[in-house]
Length: 407
Image 1 (tube, rainbow, N blue to C red):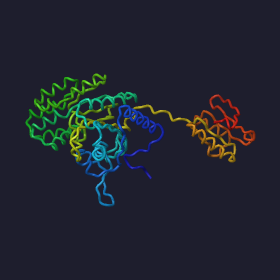
Image 2: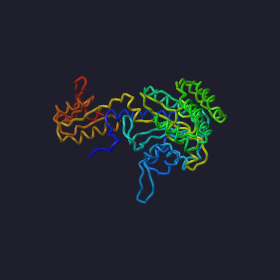
Image 3: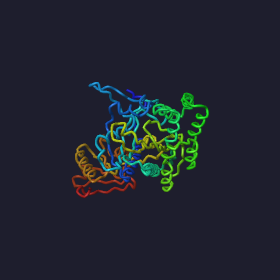
Image 4: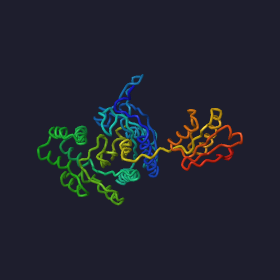
């Protein structure tokens, strides 16, 4: 039997690295006062076909249950969390700050750093339209990468100039989404095909190309305003305020006004973090999603972290060796060995019992390979005097200890 394509078996350093990433994420979420939530692994199919984007829809693991209902394994976690908010949390005082971790599933071609089952973590701020909420999310993410020792580069953009320009060309939302997906794909031929199909002259196509290619610092915003020349773009372009705050926090960034996230529900400021050429986190503002899913109009901003990719950039912690190994000289002492181990474990100590019936010399060799600090040897002769032998595996020193004093 083989594991399914696009999945992995995790153990040893890989798994420990993932645990470390989750530990830092959860600790940072907690310090930023996000409340953790959990949603089902599968949801109604419609939740992901409303506004997740055609690429995601094509990658869904969808199926009918035994009652004929259309369901899908979740491809991402923002839409399920927004569904939870609408059903359970919409009366909570604003802003509502939620965080989560969970496996997601997408049927895409496996490659380095991309799997069909992957672990995602994320955080959402619901109910605030202020740029300070966008900056709070970015600040939290930057702190995660700093604590993990990952040198992540922040790229920030804004969809309003691009959408405003496309609206001026007469493109509706679905046509705009198609072009944004082509930009996000990084496929030059696909992008050129979409540009060629636009109802625009060569001048407008060149202006669009220039807008997509705008990269740099704060001055990029002014260039976009000059290029688009649309009042709605300048009135709503609050990216400058976001940059003000993250500059105050000492966070370095690059502005990229060709940044177009792969999900169709983003509406304003968007951002991505990169390490080693891979995207390790991304998010942005989606002020229309809750309304699209049946809730009241509610602004929101959030981010998703690629836990598996992040784990590749950290040194995994060493696996903790047992502090104690209890070696029975014969099978007769096994029950007492188990009792000693249980008492140690109740005290919070890491203890292991030798379970294969090795001879004492082989048991000591095994304890040494496991990196055990101390071995407790339980034998009939010592027990006749109420004693056990404790051996320090580093110094080689050993002594007898009264059983009642051992713990």
